[in-house]
Image (cartoon, rainbow, N blue to C red; front, side, top):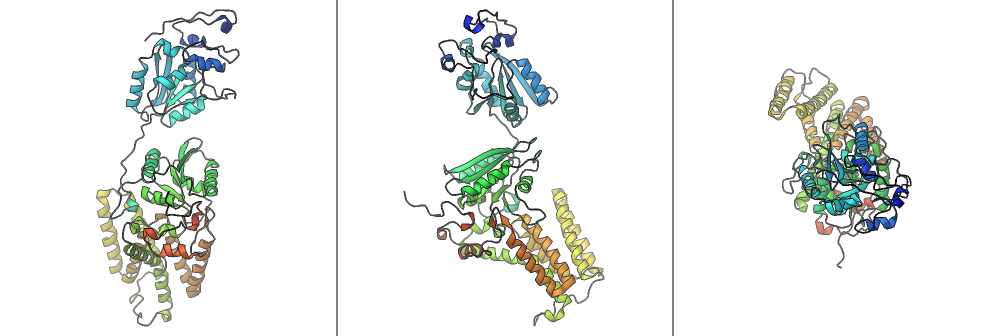
Length: 554
């Protein structure tokens, strides 16, 4: 389509003169629609220009009373030059500026090839190809936004920084020659995998969908389960260079406003080049952990778990490019719960919870207690005199423990980096060749291998992967304390460990709640999986605005 018409401005607009239009120079033709000397515009009477003409300003979808520090150039060539300088257009092969003429107005579509949704943009271009001169004559930006672009999300912007930022996030920028306002069409097409069940939180019976790396999909999974209009999903960007989208989710009439405000302020105060590792770097930036190995936030990849915590008054943080969602505040006992307990009957769920508790306690104290009885045989209870190695290995017991711990960690890391077809062979080599030969040669004792296997199973039974790693560090500290000071070492180390956990806080929430400070109802909910109808009120840990779980009849 060729722009071949000429326009003449009135004497009032020209300041007494007349400027000829040039059909070949679209920048000059566009400049003929406004007076740049005063920064104001008088629209021709009639049509869609009346509303803007009454305002006495150029086409705008924002507040033109404020100066714009980074204005959008009026000439398409200037727009192209600025995009080449600031975003790498022409250098990066995946950046595309598609220029076309619609109704005598030159329009440029700027997008990232691979993040833009081709079918939507093709439909938009097909619709714009029918735009005539009358529609595009007055206020093209408003006409495109209100009448011509058939898309549900079209937003106006007046600065190049905002438009480029939206394009880098996957949207499509629409530059209109002669207009100070650019449009952004939210036609994104992110690479995404299926919402399959997460490996770390599998259940026997229950939903099989899980969070993925796309933020919008994750929000939709939560919305599907919590259809409450009070559910809020606030979005903000973190990282100067990555501009990673972070979503704060909460239920407005349940969550404590002070908790929401505190988390929001901490996210806004993060000053980093970027968070390419998403939620983990965000956690370190907003939670002052230092060298504390224990997790102060809970992670989940299950939408049903996130929805259940929202209904309890918690706040969730979702990061784009990550399938893990942070739940705050969280206590030590939050990391001991698993969705499987709530997918079974209360009595079965309570039994499973206690089995898990015993496994976690074994992963912490079984090896230190056994080692203490080996060093102090007089501490063995009656009937348990058989405890202890009958034929000590050639390596000291403590060194055997350390080598076994390092060997298990090495096998765990090797299993992560080993391709699936080779993982079985790796396990056979580690378990049979190394373990069996080490015992037969007399380097290790069978009893040490047995007990450390039980402790490792208890570690793997811990629902929170982060908590299991922290407990492993504590187990090593307890072993060294027993080796150095025997009974006093175990007692003092255990006391210091409990005091350390009691002093921790997760967003003003005591980490050892409901054990310290003591809360009878909270402790009952921790020890037993109560029936659903027994949950009349929400736990006090979140200080929810509405503590009633059973809604009153309307």
